[in-house]
Image 1 (spheres, rainbow, N blue to C red):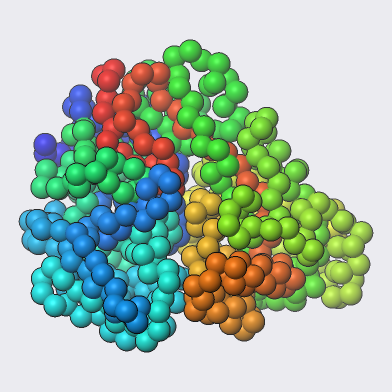
Image 2 (image 1 turned 135 degrees about the vertical axis):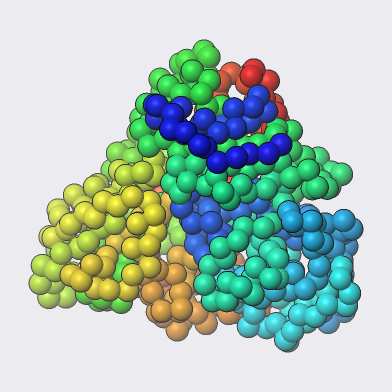
Length: 524
């Protein structure tokens, strides 16, 4: 099926957004956020990760049980010393332009990923070399065992090691990739892309699914529609109305305030994603006032998880307090002596006085476009003011928000002090893959917290294969992170997707990204 750029202007917001690709086999989705950035290795933004799963494939996937399964890989082995891994690709893998996927493409992709991902960076520290035996077989040779090799290559969330063409990687250099050529189940229609408004993905007729049933990001990625069109509608009511009128087929993220009414509508199916969001507050630790750990601690003491979750979610039973830096209920989660999630404004004021806080305004990044976290900034501002801080909200569209948080400028020169991110719990479950736990300063995640003790503990975690020892190290990492107030966990919440009842078949339970292979339309 071919698509062509829209030639004429169509009146009406929804009509203008969906006029392209009106075929019966087009699944129309309102995504969780506007898609602005196309390179899934250049950002931890979940919408760009979701775009990555549409276009690219991975060496391994994660199934619905959390197990790592081969994807592009046909077979693999590890030597007795556990320092040389050998992988063989499946036959017949092709990029969207018809060129074969080779070992050289894989090596170039992994080398780039290692420079951009936290877990990839830990692998890089012990990678001696990667080399191709032939076009389908390659080796990763290590200086020491890396127990999380398969978990790293099959991770389902930020930053995913998607496989790209070597020529595209080489052309990008140290910048983002600009030519979107993958080997995954969908082909990105780049000429039809309207940043922040619309993206179209045509079925890749050359894709060869695995034989196993689809599960999570693993198994057979069989595409059952001609195309998937993402249409971002900024107004929540407009999105709901479009769903009811069959102008779109699926809302990936329903606005929390509408969930109770949507659940009562017999014509709609509300899909509950239990506790699929973990909120984290991050400080700019490079510049005043949060370069002082006492001021960060004061802000932590001002936080009320209950108040923030109630104002953001306000759906009974859809949120819970969690003071661990790892999602509650996961392997490494545990309570901490350093943080209760309940406010103590008097103690916060004493810390501010001790630190000599001079009233420097705290600039809080706000992103009204992202429904999963659009009310957190205002509530945090109110809590900080009760503790004696001066605050200023900086509302930005999603693209500007993503760009602004990379700025290292001081807040009084256009920079920022605080932002909140809503993460998939899988992003935060393992210390090595959790971006908020990085402590490598300017080389780390925005906020640029620097602490040699945390980095040493992360290295120790990578070195051990003993579960009890891993748990102990993970706990030490948490205690140091919270003692230094590098981040503030703000609790967990469910999220909700919506479709018309009986309109979609085969939608897979979401483990991180919502994926659209295996889905067919039944009420077109």
